[in-house]
Image (cartoon, rainbow, N blue to C red; front, side, top):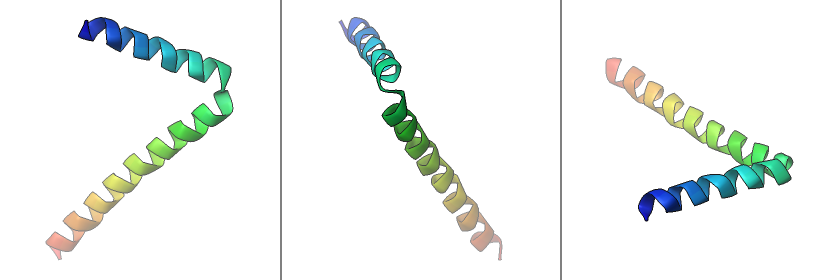
Length: 51
């Protein structure tokens, strides 16, 4: 059941991206920006530890 639910969610995401590429790209960019910010903050943390 869990595997089938995962496939259904994947198909719905692909359908959403295909029918609404503009908002989907904004969501992807937001996720990418968030991940970049996390790594940037980790870098600042490590740099502050080293000094």
